[in-house]
Image (tube, rainbow, N blue to C red):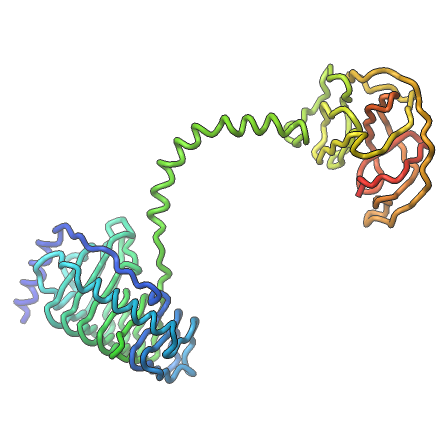
Length: 410
């Protein structure tokens, strides 16, 4: 018997480099199931099941009052029926793939070398005693399919180990009849059987135990963890080649957009820290503003302002808010606004104090009040720039100047 084992090892070692064309096995809706049975599910002891459990066409699920199930339970319903249908497709897909080589993998434990991705076939029973190591060779894409003609049996404390990126999502065990995991076995992969699956005391599975319609699943103080399976490699590889040419052609579009936006709003990063020496007609240069407070411009446009907060531009026509000319406050240095013009008298609006704002200052529509601070004004009424405080916005005027209701100040 020992001679047969040695011959098998030598054959597998020699043929381990044969290229394989195996493909992954799609589980469909069965992928979310840690336990799926056809006849019944029974449990003894404090098992932990991380994933769905289901049975169809049978209905019996027993012993789960001792277990912890972190997932849905489906018994003879549409979900379990669909999962069984998808399991049949997956089982047939795994069984139909050609073996990597002609060796008979009846004993896969304690091999001389790790197994690389491929399809490994046993004509009858497949047995694991000791440890079998699956080598991903630096990739998580490698597919490992084990085909057992009849049974799959693991000895006590046997182990399936993954190295070099081997992915538990890509390990499949297609079993022609029943599977038995020995006491204390540490197992990896999705087990698909036509008949029963038994997990003896203390066996753990990183994967799934899926028995078709004639099979039952029996647990005894086990831990079953499904592995969330995705395909991260495909989207990660594709974008770099597509993104680079796209980036080289797109810069012209952002350039056009950015030159248009400043006419409406002045972004904080674009505002210089010192006022320019000359600004266009109808504009005001702002040499100093409090941080985080806006400037309100009625007519004209803001040329520059060392301010971090938002800049709010409003036209006189938009606001419907005429101000009296203030000839005693000439334009700021560096501005190019026109000089004083004829003053049109403006009837004072009635006082309509608004409710108090959270900071203790009136700032709701209809608020009025005396405020102080600098102002640059076109005495013709076409451009007025104000800074200071009123309500929640900064809007000082000379001492004694009273403002009518300002609906745009909130």
